[in-house]
Image (tube, rainbow, N blue to C red; front, side, top):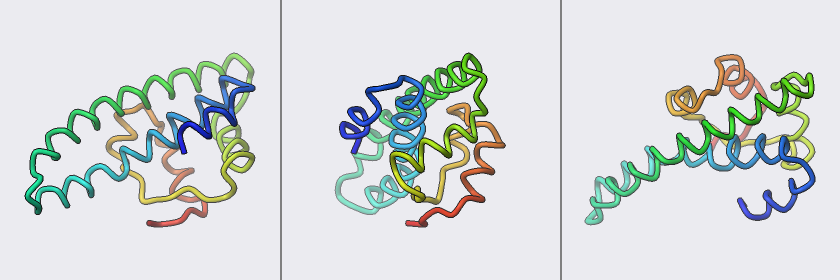
Length: 126
C-alpha cells in the first residue's frame, strides 16, 4: 500500500514522486467514479459528495507529484517515461491495474505520451 511504498522509496525523492502520487494516489482517481456509481444506487448517497471532495483533492496531490517527478527527471537529464517504467518494474513488477481515468489524469498533468505509455503497456484490467 501507500505506506509500504513510502518506505520502499525512502532512498530517493524522484522514486517516491514517480510511485506514490503517480501510481498509488492516481489509482484513486481511476476507481472513484465507479465507487461513486455504487453509492448512488445505495442508501449511502451522501458518500458521493464526500468522494467528490476526496477526488478533487487527489487531482491536486497527483498534479503536485507529477510536477516534482518531471522537475527531477529534467534536473537529472532522465527521460520521464523510461524512468517511470524502470521504477515500476523495480518496485511493483510489470503490472499496474487499469483502466485508467484519462480525464482525471490529464487534469493531474499526465502528458498524452504518458497516457499512451500506460495504455500500450501490458497491464491488468480490473
